[in-house]
Image (cartoon, rainbow, N blue to C red; front, side, top):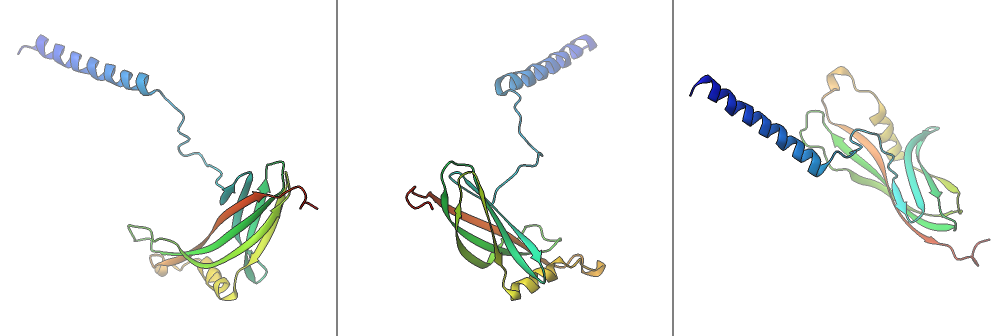
Length: 167
């Protein structure tokens, strides 16, 4: 094969690759993926009510602060199942551990139309001590040991409150 035939082959191969890439773009099109953009996720969503929960320090103890917001035009009565979860992970682990529920509580909340309801659940003292211990920054020699972390998970079930029950 001489030089002129060789360059023709590579030119055809390159043109085919470019044409194939363009076909993929035309057929599938470029779409926004929202990859890497921070997305606001609510702990729970039920009908017009969004519920958020956060574990916060209050005084000497810890509380789960719950905020339920109603975007609808009717008052909603919600049953909130609140779960405090714990997970013990090591930085050297290849696979993250699954969270375990260490405490749970059920709470009934009435959320006004277009408004919000705030509640706080006190975490038991025994768990508050574990949460406080998990907040301490590890020493350099403890950096790779397994550490415990905590989170909040909420399940919500809401129903519209009939007009004759609204006071």
